[in-house]
Amino acid sequence: MTSFSIHGVGVSGGIAIGQAHLVSNALLEVVHYQLPKHLIEDEIERFSNAVATVKQDLEQINSSFRKNAPAELSAFIGTHLMMLADRSLSEAPKDIIRNEQCNAEWAIKLQMDDIVDQFEQIEDEYLRERKQDVIQVVERIIKVLLGHQSQLTTEQQASATQEERRLILVAHDISPADAIQFKQHQFAAFITDVGGATSHTAILARSLNIPSIVALQHARDLINNGELIIVDGDLGVVIVSPSKEILAEYKLRQELWELEQQKLQRIKTTKAVTIDGTTIELFANIEVPEDVTAVRAVGATGIGLYRTEFLFMNRRDMPDEEEQFLAYKAVAEAMKGAPVTIRTLDLGADKQMNPDSVVNCANPALGLRAIRLCLSEPQIFHTQLRALLRASHFGHIKILIPMLCTLAELRQTKLLLERAKSSLRKEQIPFDENISLGGMIEIPAAAINAEAFANELDFLSIGTNDLIQYTLAIDRTDDAVAHLYNPLHPSVLKLISITIKAGAKLGKSVSVCGEMAGDVKLTKLLIGMGLRQLSMHPSHILSIKQQVLHSQLTQLNIQARKVLGLTDIEKIEALVAKFNLN
Ligand code: PEP
Ligand code: MG
Image (cartoon, rainbow, N blue to C red; front, side, top):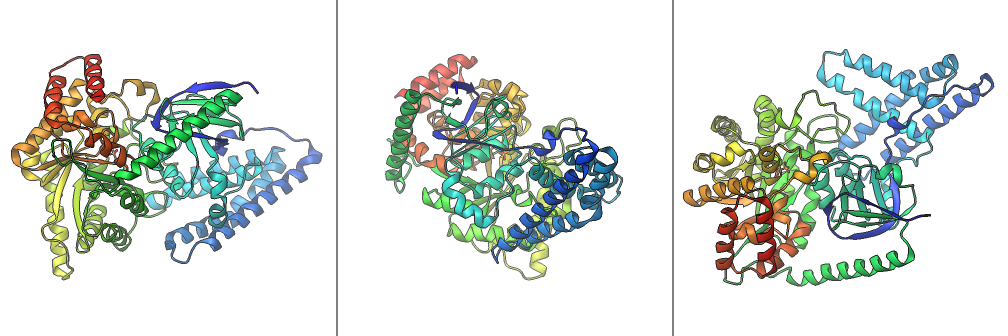
């Protein structure tokens, strides 16, 4: 086997060596072929066997759920079992195979298209969305027909972890809704053909704390299942079928990397203080309550960003107030009085509730997303605000509003928060009357007007992922423009600086919670610009802390001022690289 390498964009560092595990998109793989008459009955039997296998899989998954698993999960599987038993999925395709003399995959796909068309005609939005369940069930049948491994049950997953640690996921694309499910697994690495470094898929990949690379273009076509590959997350390179020498070299580098990680553990309880004595608070970003374990393991000051939208994904209905309350309360309690900044729902753009959702607007990133969506669906927002307020009684919760653009949005949000508070007061349900309200600065218009926002909020948090996307007009999910996505663009730095100054002037704290905060190459610049709070994935906290411990603030202030005076990206990059050497 000849060795070759593929280059992409590294989104999470480290080295992994393992076997490629191709993640299929079964629906794309369906081909159409005709069968001779004498094979038709065999084909029908093949179809029946596939349906039986899927039924067995679903039943096994259902029975392997732990007792305390959310009821929705079981209901979800129940719906799929019901659909599978329905004549239209289990019998009608057999007629198609017979009448059209075609293969089983094609028959079930034709039938699915027909059913989905019927769902599309339904007025009721909830029922219309049920088409996703049909698609998911059909995908399962097709995967079995194509000979892909059937879905692992949770029990099997547990015993497969050893195996998983050596597997490298190779996918064309993975939606954030899919990626969140990988948190239950322990793969060695994660690589995709498409995506940008700050797409939500990449952010999730990073939070898995395994090497990952996106924008590899044709990796999924070029790599075979089971092939040995090396993933170098730092360089963004995948080496397929490496030679003995290359493999030995990478094994050595992998050991050194692991040693480095172990050494970082020594500063776990050390405070993040610069050489000249200024404390920098290092917070963690989380996506699901279970992430708190990783946060506590690295001794973070608190949670600077809890992205609640992941609670709303991969399910048929919205989480109700009680379910949300329990999730937020669990995080608040686990953090034992340390601040927990919970961001209200930021659905929309690349974060859809379901991986197969069809986005019906031309520019989803500029569409009905985050606070815009919440203000247009006040009932959903009211439920979340009540859940957040109720949970605030059990810890130190702060509320963070995403994607603010106008003061009118902020004032409307405050009215709705007041309404949620008064409804709780009426019911005599306790909550933190002094709960802090902060806003994300991630739209250039908000950064330019940061003083006005700081005036009406308790704190600001800069979402650099979106701030860069909107300032530079670069879709954060698009690999074709990934090379242009640059946090060191002078205009991005100016907007960050305006926001920091606005906070300082009005005595309001400002943090960065975008991916810039976890990039060790930018730490000295950010603290030199005046930031005292950074929030990042737990896996970055120790390396950022080490950088803080090596920083001399007085010197960095001067250098940051010089950087802000430059207008040329290349010159900025050179200067930042220079003061990182000190
Ligand atoms: C950001 O935009 O920087 C941010 C933290 O929010 P998200 O990545 O969830 O959009
Ligand atoms: Mg954002």
